[in-house]
Image (cartoon, rainbow, N blue to C red; front, side, top):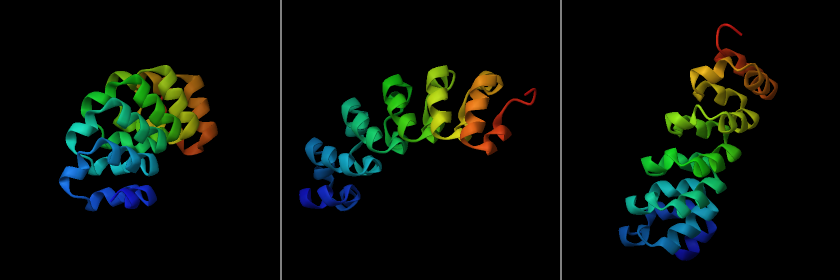
Length: 144
């Protein structure tokens, strides 16, 4: 299994349950493919460092993390730096965070749709989003 996850992290899907609980095997899997976090045992999905590694490899891995980590600012920042659409899974209080939303829309303009309403009327954020992807204008506040 170790050789398999080194080549393809998603090999973790086929591993025995006791191996999905093995921190080292899961760490190697998520280093190779962040989204292989979905196959890890639930207790490892709460491991902040393991989730950080997964999200740094693929921001979309946040989707598979324990709920409490979706409000962890550092973890969410790692995620939006890799994939702006990670903002979709962030806790509501982080969708109001100007820095997080700015990084997300710089990476993927259409991630503006996941921002808090008050930020959808922020001219500068909307400008950055639209520069990245013109379709982002669809998600801006009507008054803009």
